[in-house]
Amino acid sequence: MKPLTFLHGLLAVFSLSLGAAVAQDEPDTGEHPDWPRWCGKVYESGYPSFEPGGHTVAPPTNGSTYLHLQFKPRYSLYLSTEKTASFVVNAALSPWFGETFANSSGYNVGKAPFEELPFEIKVVGDDVPLVESKIKVNATGVEFPFDLARLKPRVAPYEVVLSAASGEGNRKFTATATSEVLYLPDNPEGSATKIDNVKGGLLFKNAQTEQKFVPLLPYGYYGLYNGSNDTAVADSFVHDYTSGGKGLNAIISLAGFADTNPVYESMDKQGLRFMFDLRGSYKNLTDTEIRVNTIKHHTSLFAYWTADEPDGWQVPFDKTPAAQALIHQLDPYHPVAITLNCQDYYFGAYSIGGDILMEDVYPIGINSTFSKWGTVCNTTLGDCGCDNCRGGIHDVSSRLDDLAMYEEWLGRWPLPKFHNPQVFHGEDYWARDPTPDEARAMNALAFNRGATGIFGWTWPSTTELFDVHSQMAGVVTNAPVSEFLLGGQPDRLLVEGHAIIDAAYWVQGKRAMVSVVNGGYEDIGGPVSITLPVSATGVESVAFGGLPWELAGGQLVIDKLPGMSTSFIILNIDTTG
Image (cartoon, rainbow, N blue to C red; front, side, top):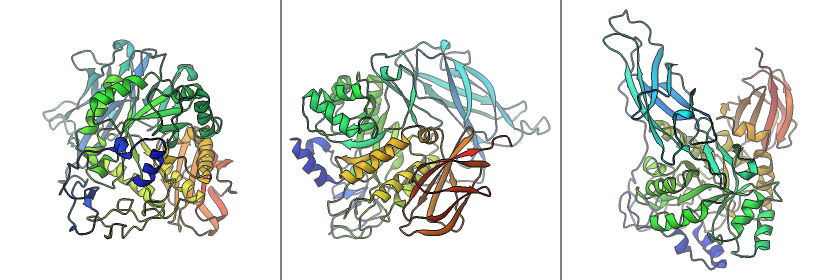
């Protein structure tokens, strides 16, 4: 749950009522909609607990194996200035989804091993394939290029279908899958953002990038502005917020950012990428259309934000998809993000309205078992400020693990995930701000789960936390660290004997990066050793954290690992073996 009174006090400074900013429909989903509920659970005393429903569970199995075909374009959009594109195809074996799989190509041809699946990809209504190839059974993430000259740029996506069939015989395996390709006219006067459907990150282009798509790891705050129409004030705001371009590189524009305020021109000029706030209007499609058409030409716009915690508010399921569809129609050059608050309240229905999923786990300083409303907090009752949380930094990694698991159970292609760190206290939910070490550690835990964006709630925060996030942003949004964080999903590392340590690694060419978080508050006496899955030849640098990591016997080693510490270590690796 967002700190509403806290936000109300800040918004009042800018003569904006909270109700106008975050007005919601009467709760419509779940049980007992006339009771005070959050995430489907009643939270005030005097009401009985009940099962809220909406849980995402693993699909039932019957012991069969299925071949689950999925495909998507590598990027969410292509522009007329590009010549080639590609599809990414998955042919994974699954206990839940796809067509029944048997390891033979046909019963009348000696049951030859079924190891490769021929397929073709066509535009619906066109008999000439864009791609004609084969994929190995149980292969995932295989890329197949095609020539964009086969398509004409247009604002509507092309519907495409993949058709696959195994070899000869009276029992051939056949399957189909569908997707869309967006091939747009260029927009050199504005900006465009691509989602990388393999690596989970963003690429952005505008005139400042010389119309070339460059990787973007957005790191900033949900930000408040004083509403001034003075250009000098706006320029100063952007300069201070970004630390002169050396810190935060993105913002979600909250109160004070009127749609025609010159602060957006200041962001365009200084390169501060912004996500446009539509949370107060996304349920009114007329208002949404007016606002999108007003803002969509800005060169610093990289995404839209519609729903803030629709699962917590129990908003009708159709609201976010309707807004997303309209925005895609009005401005196909930019993705739509939503923020989910609940651990699992109708995740499937609430997540389909976004191209980017943000989670806002605020676990620091909470009482996770008893709320300010006079009730206990558990899976069927209560609101303690962080849904079904334990009250520690590991709630962040647990939530991101949950979201990935739900997508797998639903058979979906994973969406990019952004983390919304806690940078506040109050409301009788949160007794204190996170410490600097906790703030750094929670972000690193999110990165260790593949997060590719960070937006703290809210700015202005304390100077201490602003400095912490600005300093971390200056590292993770730039090479070499950003190359790893945006270069693909991380793999986990288990640290033997130290379950409290959370570690992950990325590999890019002849280098690897290891992220290490001591999730406990106590120092761990050494030496602490981490066995590496790659053949490292040396420590190139400790890019973040400042700890004296060394390489010994193929392991990362440190004499003592301080409590609540975070490290990013870049290694040189031997790729010849």
